[in-house]
Image 1 (cartoon, each protein chain N blue to C red):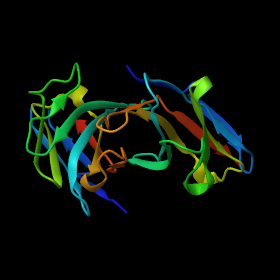
Image 2: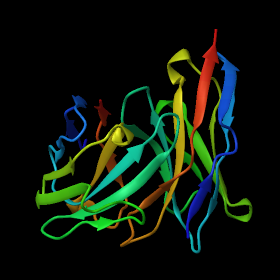
Image 3: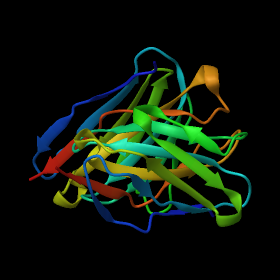
Image 4: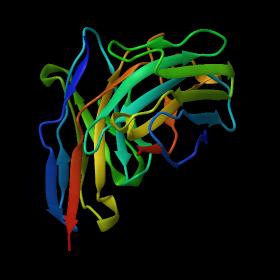
Length: 114
Length: 118
C-alpha cells in the first residue's frame, strides 16, 4: 500500500527566509509525486509534480522539489518565502498509468511571520 | 487550464435531510472523478472513485448507501449525502482527470464544499 509521511505538522518561518517542507513516501514502484497547496476553505492547487527525468522539478510560485529515490523523499523548497505563501501544503503519491488514485500526507501548515 | 467547479461551496442542512454536491469539469471531459473528505486540520481521505457511466468504487469504510455518487456524464459527478447527521459535517472536495490526458495522472481539484449538518 502506498503512504506519505509529512513529519512537520506546523512550520513557522520569517518572510524572506528559505523554506523546506519534508515528505517521505512508501510505494512499491517508482511513483508519481506531487505537492499541492491549500488556502483556508479552498481546494487544492498543484504546485509541482515529478513523473520521471530530472529529479529536481520546478513548480509555480518559485517552488521546487527534489526526488531522492534512495531516501524515498520529495522535499519541497523555496529560497525566499512571501507572506502569501502561508497555507497548508500537501505531499501526495500516485501510481503510474492506470492508477490515478492519490494518497495524501497529513499536510504541513506554513505560517509566515513578518 | 483545466477548471473544476464545485457547487455549492457551503451548505447548511438539518439532520435527516439529504444534500447533493455537484462537481463539474468546465473545459474538459473527465473520465474519472474522485471524491475526498477532509476533516478540520487533517488530510484528504479518498471516499470514492467515480467513472462515467459505471458504478462508483468506494474506499473501505465508506458507506455506499450514505454517500451516493453518480457520474452521469463526462463533465458531471454528484455526491449525495443521504440522511445527513452532524458527524457528516466536513469539507468535501472533488477532483477530475482530463480524459485527453489519461495516464498522465494530473488531477484538477474543485474548491470544495463545506457541509454543516445541524
